[in-house]
Every structure is written in structure tokens, then in C-alpha cells.
Length: 175
Image 1: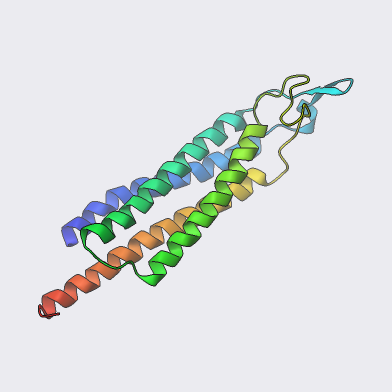
Image 2: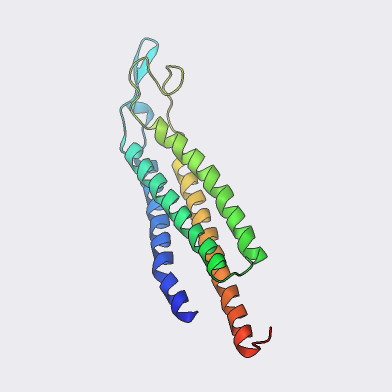
């Protein structure tokens, strides 16, 4: 089990790196989002150029989704391969992970979509231009970090539980 556990370390490092990349992209998107001075009006029609936050938001979404999927696959594979019951704490952490992931993806996806080019008369919604409010991308970064932390904690909790069960079987093979 110890070799397998060490083999998980690179995978969990990839998940951690992707999560940090996603959070960093969210913070960068916050700094690069469209401002009121970028808004151009022509009568009742408005125009907003595409900002760097659009691409940064897409990078953040991709990194977050890959990190979430890989992190959850680790937990599921650990439980499947070792035929272990997932500990209650690990399950709770996975639920928190998915809830924060769902809210984060929705918030980040909306903000990213609003950061795309909004031509005259086409706008983001019903022909109107919308600006991303202050702190939306930062809030997404916080949700990304919560998702990352709970996913990694769930994987570590599951690994620790499997190690404890494995040690008990080595000490008392009858159980």
C-alpha cells in the first residue's frame, strides 16, 4: 500500500497545481476585467470589447474541471481498488467539493461569458451590455480554493483510512 500511496503523490500534486492555476487565473481575470471606462454608448446601444479576463476565465474553468474530475477519480479508484468503504468524513468533503464546484463553475462561467465581446445591439443578455461586478472573479477564486481543499482532503482521508485498515489486517489477519 505504501508504494501505491507514494504513487498518488504526483497525481495529487497535479490536482493541486491545476487548482492553484485556476485560482490564480481567477485573480488575474479580476484585475483584467472590463471597467466602466471601456463601455461605449451609441444612443441606446452599447459596446464592450473582449477583455483578457475572458481567456483567463476559460483557463480557470478548464483547470478547475480537470482538477475536480481527477481528484474525484482518485477517491473513487482508491475505494474501488481496495474495496474500502469511503469514510464519512471523506464523503462529507466530497459533497462540499461538488457544491462549491457547482457554485464556482456557475459564477465563473457567467463572469467569463460577460467578459467576451459585446457588440453594438448584441450585448450579453437581451441586447444590453453588462459589466462583471467587483469581486466576482475573486469570489470564484475562493470557491476554487474551497473545492481544491475539500477534494484533496477527501483523497488524503480516504488514503489514510485505507492505510489504517491495511495495517489492522497485517496485525490481525483473521479480521
